Length: 142
Image (cartoon, rainbow, N blue to C red; front, top):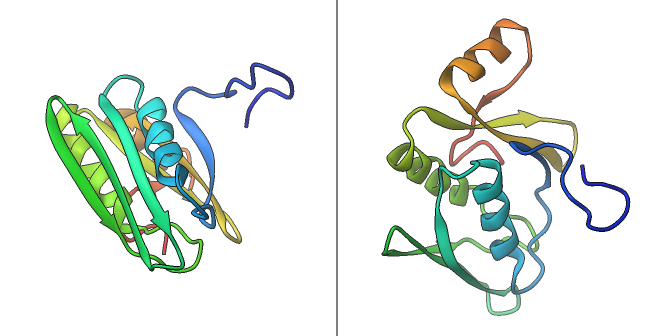
């Protein structure tokens, strides 16, 4: 879902393809957080993002600041699969920052899915159009 040559910009500002089997090393959760920040289009102003991932040590966490508040999320390690509970955090924080928007989830076959962010009325319009999209929760990516 990016251009096929540099600078590799995304085709869509508020949606992205997501591979659930993407946590192999440090920076994996940083990339996820940056992607969630990007698709929220200014409504999730997280900064100073860092992480630690060690599958061997069975340990992973993500840290960032949101409006001066330090937040740390300990992530469950299951090989190289993302911890779905992390998305519950992002959903909750988006609601705190901008109650008019919600993160969306469209499940596809296999380990990939599509994540998005939209205003509540845009979400309802997608549902009325028959698109199988749901609100992203801590259990959506299981």
